[in-house]
Length: 439
Image (tube, rainbow, N blue to C red; front, side):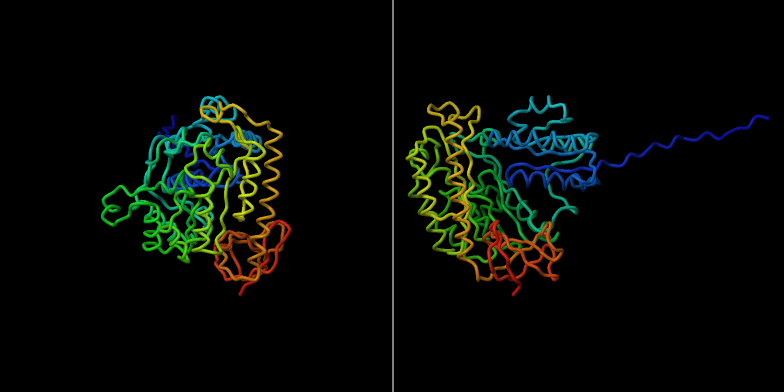
């Protein structure tokens, strides 16, 4: 007897969405781009995990500001592939913009994108839009980085980033406010404004023009007046942008008194060769203006050592200016020739050993000035935003930052991440952290 079997339609196998991990190198602008891409992917239902979450895809945001940054980007990609050989690796960022053919040829790389939107489309099968904001449910809820502009119109002779990123573009104020308010509603206590040259931000829309929001300082005022952000931090500003109008804002309690002013050199001769828009006199005046409105402010800086034609006399001028200004921290970079920049073909390139020696001298000075900055503030009381439990320490030791960027460790069972407490600074540790207690 023949048994008739009912025909059934095969049930398609449903593959789970890939788990995705991010590795971001370089500046805060890169961090902001990675965060936004993470949000878009999470909105689409993808699981965002850390490197220990056995991701199916690693997304690497590369940096190309120096040769060393390029090297670190390549090393990071290879290390990630070794740690999880089955994971696919997608890359984007300045490194890819500078060396796309190289990254496309790397055996570890599955997809090299010029823009993060290309990765979004690749993973989502061509669906989705890059613009707009979403809800990110899987990131640290202490500090959010918001990019307010991109590109740079300056012509600094050493810089490759301005070439890779293109001309300046300001994001609309309406979008910036919306994104900040979104992050505040998600629970973030601190917002960091970033970009390639953020003080070049200009209001371009009808809302900006009608509201008298013309420049970066006006934007800061609008953010303070139209959001409930607890702390607003500025990533980096150009020295020529520091004027009385900007400095007045430093009296605002919610604006963090931590101003990063890239000096690059303390020699007027070298500044001219770098095509910077200020001299040492104007830079020092900007620092005095900041301190006059915010005496407790931390002024930090970037310095390039071993720029072409830099003599020992030029370097000593840099050292003396740093000692005079008393920076809270100096980020030191040995000059790195970048192909396609005017400085790369200048005569009198400096020997690598000389650059290394000068970098060591400035880093030692930076450590000395950092200790001095912190020592002068021991005994004072600050509001500290706690971020994480101290690794390798007792479970109740938490670390956080003061508004002027001093890292503070407190032993207390009442603390947790994303809590702001008034803390008295007690003493320094060997690594320039500070031990504090709750007031």
